[in-house]
Amino acid sequence: MEIIKDQKFDGYKGQKQQSESKKVSNVRKDGDVYFNTGDMMVKDKDYNIYFNDRIGDTFRWKGENISTTEVSNVLTDIDFVVDACVYGVPIPGHDGKAGMATLLIKPEVTDISDKELSVISTHCQHSLPVYAIPMFLRLKWGELDMTSTIKQSKVKLKEEGFDYWTVGDPLFYYEKSTKTFKNITKETFEDINNQSILF
Image 1 (cartoon, rainbow, N blue to C red):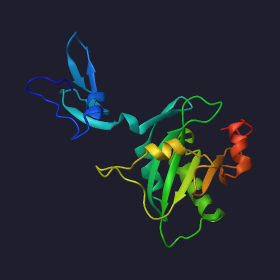
Image 2 (image 1 turned 45 degrees about the vertical axis):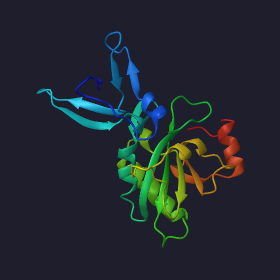
Image 3 (image 1 turned 90 degrees about the vertical axis):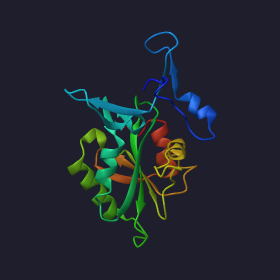
Image 4 (image 1 turned 30 degrees about the horizontal axis):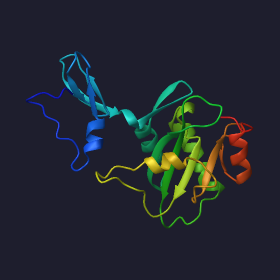
């Protein structure tokens, strides 16, 4: 969106540096300034503009663009999953980012066994294209971190990824050959990093 006299951009309250980072200069001509919303918009035949998705809420894996919202909606259809935060994480030896989902589990489900993991994998296989199935799961109880605007906070989750030594929550990876989620141990974490386990 162009910043002009009648279309001002006030920015984020008390966050001048973040506000300035959203400005893009010299887009169509020297001296113009635009505000990068981070939203993907769609224009119809009548030139009406509609919100489509957050640009930051997609990632590319196996040559496909994957919507985190679409994957999250599928995962929250599982009866013991309260909420799902989906994001892309890099894997050594692979282009793009693999899907990872942090699942908020119902408090009454105190442990996740092979039975629940099988429910998750079967549901994903039936409801998502192969390339959109999360390659990693992180399970949490309690609550997911939220931003001040009540959106899921993904920054820390992305930074921690599937790091066995950093993440204190249960971690799993999707084993292609068996189409099941397997526990990430220190050994499998090393195997993923040295590319003995492929995705």
